[in-house]
Image (tube, rainbow, N blue to C red; front, side, top):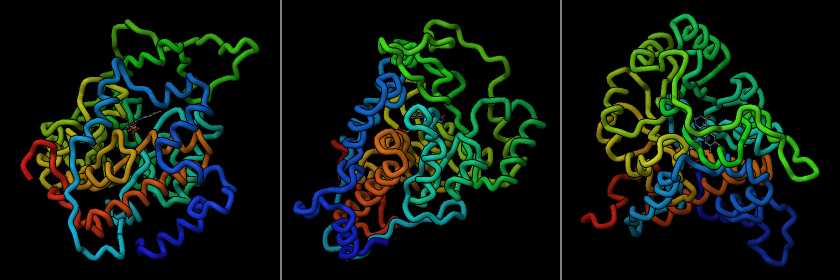
Length: 387
Ligand SMILES: Cc1cc2nc3c(=O)[nH]c(=O)nc-3n(C[C@H](O)[C@H](O)[C@H](O)COP(=O)(O)O)c2cc1C
């Protein structure tokens, strides 16, 4: 809970810029928003790693849309509400969270900072953020102390009942709090920046090697290549797999990558615990529009039966406020904390979370909504729509 006076006090104490006569001792306090962190990340990273972090697929139309669509949503602030205390807290599947911002899964963290995977887990722990990990659950919990959901993709785990059961039991035993099944990565898309850069796929896990004296990276053994007809060695997961997964565990199961009312309805019918409206940060199928545009139809279809989360382009407190007003229970982010990671390691991740969280608190105070339950659909209007 933020009270107006202590909140400002803490800002001044942590941020010497609030008093210009005190020189700033800590570079992580210099950037004032997520975009500033992105600039520093770009300066510090090898351009190939930057492209991997920041890029989207094909023409990057959805990447652009994810951000641009926020400008079509207008906040309708309310006046003269007592906002001297702002409460961002919520409960999600029995987990108490201090704020509605969750760290999305992201491969390639070691490309952006040494030991990036564990660095993010430590930062999440310090910031008390719920993290969806694609690293090992055990290591993530050791580094961050949780809570942690595990991100499942189309790997071998879902191939048959035995592998699925063994996998789920291991997750349960390790203290995982939920399973996030990413549904939008049956194939890896054409990410043309990676193709042009001839990015070696394994570097996404290991980190980029050093460039040689001529500034060249070693040649990739398995680069991203265009024009290979898609096929996978095993049948890809279907709603049957979801039903089977559901029957094997009582852990919450979230489907990440839902963009339509039809699939949201199927998610409810198949016993899924929640959905994440996501286009994978515009890194998979292009031309799917912005996730904030897909959110209302998913919220309508789900009709309050399960929580709806959303990600894609959230960079500001006002973006988060708009997502919550359109019916999301919480917002997930990936690139923002990856910018923080690339810029400053653990303190960078923590500071990005702090900035998003305090921007949200401030924007709630300015909009006359002191807690999450007071944020309703009436708080926003789509441009051109009657209020
Ligand atoms: C570098 C990078 C790697 C990602 N890797 C994964 C992944 O392994 N699994 C997954 O479900 N989503 C992955 N995503 C997508 C994010 O989880 C998330 O859906 C998306 O990036 C959110 O949008 P934002 O980056 O604009 O916040 C990745 C995103 C980025 C930027």
